[in-house]
Image (cartoon, rainbow, N blue to C red; front, top):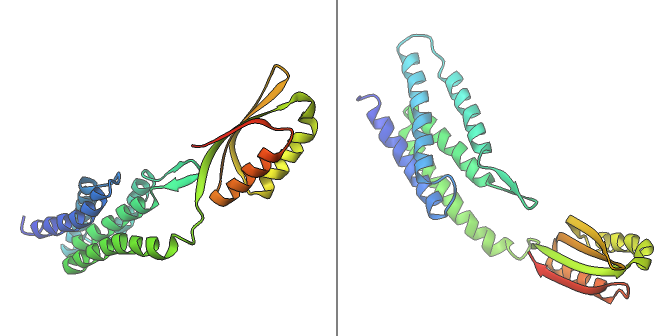
Length: 220
């Protein structure tokens, strides 16, 4: 117990420091997840460290390498793709980092592990504020829109190429598009993503097209 108790306490401190920040931000890997990941990494590395100290010929680095592989799978589980964007990258990286802290605690690098847990929180909090302060105006704002309009069937032959050129010119990225024929009309339903300023230009040019009628557009 005297061997494991300080390690367990140190691992819980590291997991709690980072997990609280994640929990307060409403992230999927919160307080409990960070503590458990840190404790699990600590236990595995502690057993390997104990084996090497007892002279059994165990190599702690081999165990740590397996911990890294396992954390990679765990981190990949919280990363997902949604509406053309990749979400959860920071959460996956945090889990990987928490596991590394647990391994440090397992080999009795207590002070360094606890100090690095506060460094991680500083990066998560302070760097986010720096990004918001200095980079927000330089980031392109992409928005999803739903666009509906119709044309007469006799105008279809030339309009399709004209519409494709219009989307390319204004860097419109279509996600889904359906075309339906009804009562001599061809009805378009388009879901696309675009920068806000380019979207306004695209909508204006499309509205000025004499072949287009009943044009409607809403943010998705």
